[in-house]
Length: 74
Image 1 (cartoon, rainbow, N blue to C red):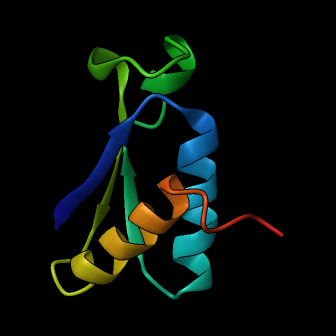
Image 2 (image 1 turned 45 degrees about the vertical axis):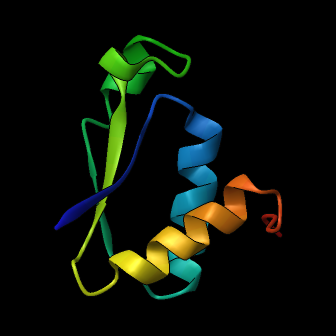
């Protein structure tokens, strides 16, 4: 498994999970409870989304598209 993103931003994490599921990419959320303790995008209070090595490149492209505003949740 590889770390796709570490963030304390619940909106980014939620949108990313939505799009990963839509693409059929399995993921694990590590430290998911930490973001609720310290809201905001703090590196010390980050939740991490992990994906398989095989899905990493595809998931990384999806993340970049999301961060660039090219995707939206329906």
